Length: 301
Picture (cartoon, one colour):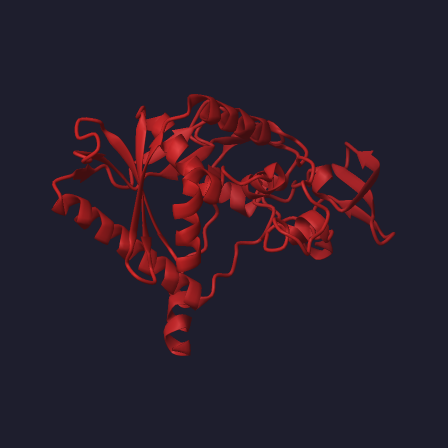
């Protein structure tokens, strides 16, 4: 099995989301969304077993579509894109459907999930909004973008094949609050405040941004961690650079340039001097050392 898992890992492509993922909007931490948008942390190394679980989840999605079609429901629009807030809020839908038995003439958004037995029972008991806020946000933002009033949330229990179906009603107020929240995060220069100081407790315990947020790690070097860059609101997740007065391609954003200067709020230290002519910023780091930002960041980070 180790060889199979290793093959999964070798074939897995690491990628950075171009914006705030619809699948993460339901999280409670603004700071985590900010770090994800700014590519502050290194891409998560996903182990082979977890990648196998993802593949199984994809197969369950196909099964649930077939189940619906078996009872006369027409499912279409799988993987249609969601683009909101200048394209910086991004995602895909699992599909749309007509012919849902409870309301056959109403077009529904579809959200398909698989769950272990414990999680499934919690969903059945508490329903989607309380049990799975990340899923609920996906349903709501998907309905908002697609102009739909209902979502069919369909979950399968991976342990015993039991199904759970819930028709979720569109909540315009919820969506507008979440999108306004995202816009604030996108336009923020500094990270929002932490929601927790105890890294041994959720939500920080398993957060992929814990090292940058709590442990004074330097952020990854990219245009998105640079004080010259700006997320533009008029395109499809466009960014621009004030240093070079130009738009930035995705490849340019990932590569950064020799003129890169960290956003000061992302540096684990205090600014003690700036030199505009030399284009450097001098910091006193948390360990007391003096560090000059301006082309030397790779070694220091």
